[in-house]
Length: 280
Image 1 (cartoon, helix red, strand yellow):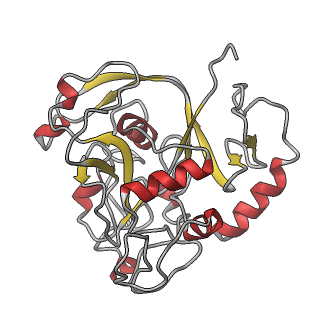
Image 2: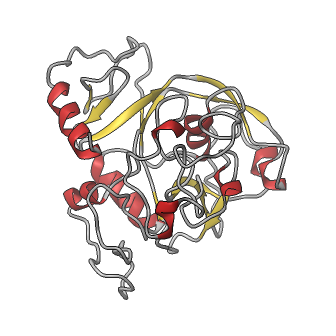
């Protein structure tokens, strides 16, 4: 079943599951409903499927590669929901925000890749500011860098969303993938590469914007609870690798950065919603 058909089925089931509590007994934020499939939720504003990331600690960073991923440090995050899929062109059109339907447009809007706009593909060539405009329209927000990493790799320090095993064509889309020779993939591709919480394509397909400003030494001084780097800087953080990159760039701990106004035909995003406090 295609991603759009799955979304339609999930939307149909959402109306049947409105009891104010989520799949794990947690109180739901306003605007979020249980979907028909266990573990999935629907955000009513844009019809996005979301998955739940419970509160708790996880080890953030890596000692293996670049200095800006060090030191590995324990981080506590409050509970939240994150989009299961990257934001699609269908959702972007629903928002009413502008876009250019041809490649190499001389505007800052998201623009069509050279294979054209496909509704079930991730919106791309999105700069940070337009990603922020979308999530504000949807009543959501961009994930913090820490939220993105926990949603991608869980609490066991794994290398990739699926674990430490080798990258395969069934798990991720990167430059050696047969599909990547021509274009990116639908947002529901590569299901064997799902994260511990069920999010797809957190390795490959398109890079994803985060809220944080980028600082190479932030891990050495970041707070232990709900870190978010709001110290103004030159760059914002991106995560997840892309279909034009090597498989080494798919690691969940890898940090990338660009300026807020930068855009490229391999940059997209996904959004998050904070979970209510248990007492609410």
